[in-house]
Image (cartoon, rainbow, N blue to C red):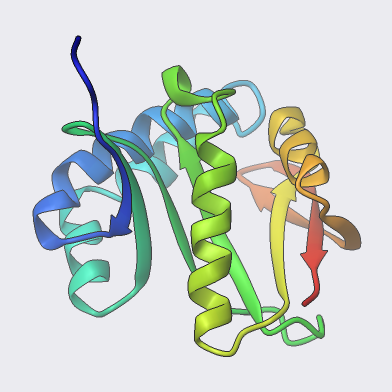
Length: 169
């Protein structure tokens, strides 16, 4: 019998290359047909290994879910960036490779990010999701997120609606 270790840990500089690959695949899967192709390519191409290496080196809170030697997913989080919302923390990104979705790994990654924020004294948090990203909306609702705000973001000539989901202590 072969056992595979599953671990959630802080990203290290040596994770930059596989993190960039995971980001690329996860974003293409999540946003194909939602964000216009050229805009999606620009967003993904900006986040190569060098970008991830710099973010890790600067101390950004990036946790990865490792499935054996594969980075199955990641969460990037910290203080809430939307001053108009009365929540202390924010999960900026939480993505899994498509083959690891629907297996409970997203829940584990979310719980780990939330626990890390709580240990830093950040008790409430918010997550933004594009409303057209049906799997993300369903995921955050299933985790108990309450819709608390709406906004929109422009991608090229397309404006997309986004929803803020929140959790309190």
